[in-house]
Image (cartoon, rainbow, N blue to C red; front, side):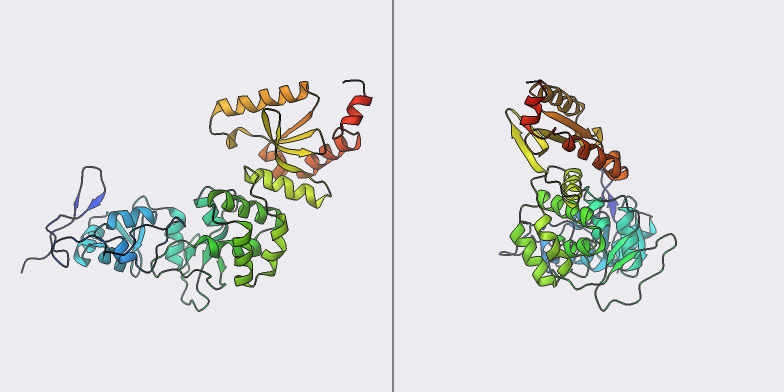
Length: 346
């Protein structure tokens, strides 16, 4: 009997088996009635019904998992094992470890995580999602408490998170669900960076309210996360603002986030009139936004507000100088209107 034809590549360059390639069950079937085909929004992992959710669409499975997949999931999604082997032989897929394959353009951090034997979590997963995170280049891996046989991979010195799973990861998952990731952030990072990271998650996923995060802390039995709860505030529009707020609070300075002043909305306000802006072109999607921020600062100064603008580099890498500057302005009363009036500038 003739074997399965080699998978073909369509004009878009995607991996695409021939329609007459001997898929099991004959005619392609859609997901079963009553089975959700929705891919969870919680970043590149799928439920226990992954086979039916991805029925007849292995290309989508690879895309949603950043180019890395478990062979069994690809077979459940519609490819045969001979087809996968032919893609490997043709150089279209690479074997990472037993049972796992990756495309040529697969996410490097996920490739490394799978080769070691874990799923991406903590700082590494924040970075992959383009959420605010420290510039930590180490690979953060989530592994089951009973995991064994982690591989040593040249050039990879991972930070391994062994804690239990609040949300179970399916066998073929390549990243950690956010419910699992949050306790890792709390345990792994300094207070300011942990709060900034969790605030960023709350902004990106509305279900992560204060109440939901509190439940995560209780379920994870995380005293560290419970201690961070009073510091969380998703009103900040960037992680840099969260970092600034937590660091000022630690110095005994309270700053109100995202305050409306007439037609303007400012990043933070200390007292009555000391405006703090977390500036920096890298945090603006367009040059026009960057210019608008500076025009707004000039207008606020004309109205009597003192405006201090700090960049990412200043806040992250030269915090003592930033704090000294803010404290000096507070000491001379730049946060109060009565001081401004006494100065004769009103």
